Length: 308
Image (cartoon, rainbow, N blue to C red):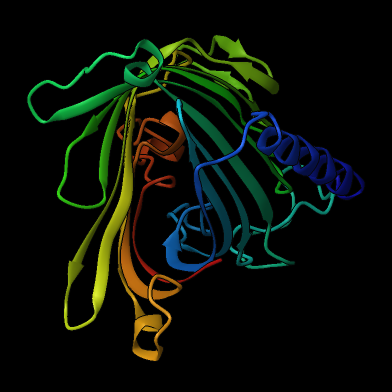
């Protein structure tokens, strides 16, 4: 397994770089940032010797680029995620790899691309109604790879309308998307009767609905600041999955403004909540009848961010 992670990461990196080159037009505006995030109580679906969920600390380097042109905008984001050894990297040990708390932590790369095509700009019509200032058609994909025993490798597409709300400053967007995903599982999926729904390997899930909201709202708290984040609520996608809710939000303070570098350097704190992570049923009976909470996340976030 170790010998496979480098080519997998290289292939994913190449795909993500190519995605940023797809639109052949000049941007009217753009913003690129790099951030460091620390989450002390995330999850790697790891259990201790008593089959209780283990917290997994994660350090994340995140590169984000957003740009706009006459007819819409692009969003590109890639995360390089390093777990502590409660979610260990696979070393080929059978049957389930190294025990949590041993070896080195797993490495994951997760990338996302979204394009918003403004229906108002394309049609030349004013689509304002109520608090909504425009509607766009959103399309994009997610890609990931990870080198723990399970070897998650997300391949997902999303398509649907996004509603852009009018704010005095900043933005608040809500997308109503159709979402389709496939992923890897080292264990396969079996129902309560013992019927095998999917053998170990790649699982192709059903199309489902996803509500995807994103926001960034500036305010003043002694120094300039902003409340930013996203919410994704993804419906059941078959294979015994449940509705998944992921909330990630941070308050970022413009510390660069103290040195005359406004909108350049930020520091802040936030919170992540993840219910039924990856669609896993947290209410289902797990090992020896215990309720499965190994994928539940409720954690603070510490974040540093630089724009260039």
